Each structure stands twice: as C-alpha cells, then as structure tokens.
Length: 430
Image 1 (cartoon, helix red, strand yellow):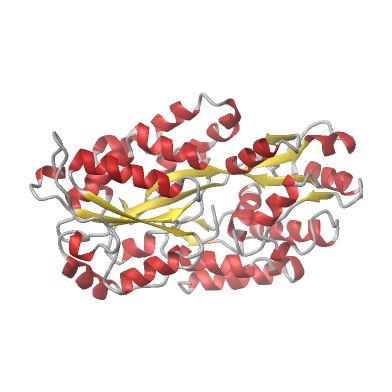
Image 2: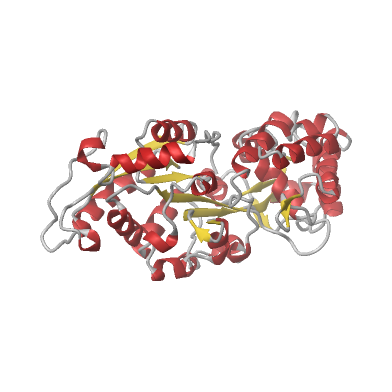
C-alpha cells in the first residue's frame, strides 16, 4: 500500500469525553466543508428507523487521483438516496492522512468513519465501534476470515477491511531468456543463482530490485521472512530477532553486498522507485502486486511473468495487506454508521471501488466476482490464506515505523544487532 506516516498516540479518557461531547454524529453544525443534513429522497428512510437525518463524516485515504474521490462522492449520493443521511467526504493523501486524522481526533473533531492502515491503538483506547455494534451478520460473514482476524483486537473486530493486496514474485521473461533461465526460481538457492545470471548480462541490468527504504520496508522484509518460517510475533510474543529472521536479513545483506545483484543502496530505495526500475526493463526480479501488473500492462514495455515467492523451505507464503474503515463512537451516529457499512459492503459498491483502484477483494462474494479475471488468479488463489503483519497489536503501529526507518541498516551493518534493537523497541511497547 502507499506510504503512510505514524499515528500519534491519543489518551483514551480525554478522547472518550471529547467524542461523547460532539453528539449527534458529526452533525451539520460540525461537518466542515460538507453538505448539511438533507431530506430523504422519495421512498428513502433514515437508517435504523431514526426519524431525523444525520450527517456523518468520512476521512478517506487517496489511493488514486483518478478514482478515489470520484467513488466516494458517488457513494455519498447513493447513501443519501438510500438513507436520507448525508456523508461528508474528505479525501486525504497517504502522505498526510495519519497526521490529519490524529490532529482531528486531538482537537475533538474525530471523523465518524476513518480509512487507515492501522486501528488497534484506537480500539485499545475504547474509541471504536466493534462489528457487533455496526456490522450486520450478513456483512460480517462475507468478510474473508484472514481479514476478520487482522481486524480483531481483544476478541472483537474493530478494523473493517476496505480492500486488499497480495504480493507475488514478478520476473522479466526476456531477461530470463537472455540469461538462459527456463523458469522462475522456487527456492532461495535458485533465486540467488538466477539473480547472478541476470546481473552478469551487464549494461546496467539488475538481478533483483530490493526496496528496504522507509516507504514499506516492513513489507519487503515480511515477504522474505515469511518464506523462511519467520514472523513478527509467535504465540503472542514478539519474535523480531528470531534465528529465522536473522537468517533472512543476513541473506538479504548477502544479495546486496556479496553477490551484488541488487540496485545501489537498497536500504534507501523506496518501493515506488524499485517498481520504476522494473518497469524500465532493467530488472530481472521484484516482488510486486496487482497495481504494478496494471501499470506494466498499460505501458506494454516489459514481458513479465508472475509466480509464487521462492522459499528457503516449505510451501510459498503470500504477504497480504489490507486497510481499514473504522468507526468512532459518537452519540447519535450509530445507525448512520451502520447504514454506511450496509451500503459499502454491497457487491456493486465495494467491488466497484476495488476494481477501479486495481486492488483485490476482501469478501467471499468479491472472490467470485474477481475470479473471472484470469490475470488475478495468482493473487486470488492465495488471498484466503495470506500472511499479514500483526495489525491487531496496538504496539505494531509504532513498531512498523521503527522497522521502516531502521531495518535497512541491516544491509550496511549487523543484521542481528538491528533486529535485536527492533525487538527491544517492540517489547518496550514501541
């Protein structure tokens, strides 16, 4: 997913009082820049049987300039027609949404619905509605179990997924042919050997593009760690400096500094820059996802293939990512919030949004809809069992930032020392 900034920590007691004081949802008096509460369209009724239309505010992350705002504005129109309630939409770039939403909450002006990639710290502070409060049974039962699990904190689901992505192994077929490689690698040994062959082609060719810069270093490391039997947590305990993870980061360092089969300075390379390298046709292998495939198809310059990740041992593991639509408790907004989710999770709404943005579904019914596209098969087959980061742990919000800023130092320094420090950060609560 796009680059995100850290959440600010907010005290539960202060915010609980502040949010309760807002009353009546965001309300027409509080919704900045939005429409006032309107009259239900003919035949429409207010959600939950409420006689008074309500205005609620959505702060949504901008996945693309072409589609995000357009979708949510159309959604607001449909929401108004169906419920009589008004949805005040504010779309914010991923670069700014963490700070924007934190400031809103600290200023007693929390949105009713917030679209973000973390939720657990707000759930821990008692600020969010759970699924029991605002999701209908039909909606909850349609969400894929992997995303129910990632959205669950302390036994209740608070993070409601809006879309997802699953990472896969991309390779340049033309470079593979030039290097005499007949098939994508299945093991780390095969991967290392293939990277050396591609790098040996010369003329600026790069065996593997490794983005360990701050944009999404936690994603790049997760992919390799999961395919070596590693993880961030195990049995409820942090395992960042486990032997498997140390072996993984050591292997990644070897690729960059001994084999020299990566681009220069992978510790500072962001994912977007690595994608651009692959799209230039100079890179043999990279970990990508469906939006990269869409760009490659649009450009038509790179003859590429997609395959499962090479593994050190065992079956390939797929790293998955989802973002959340969380709902803040505010007096009088519950029925309008529930109506929001009832409409968003309708097939014609959620799947339209996901398809326009180029991501993957989060529901069983969505899998059926997207299954008709053969290009998505490699992702969809793994989606029900994707391996996610521990977003259900409030500490992860801060650990993720530490990983993004520091794990690249394992390429130029001592991998075990870097992971030991990150382990201490996690055990100390971030």
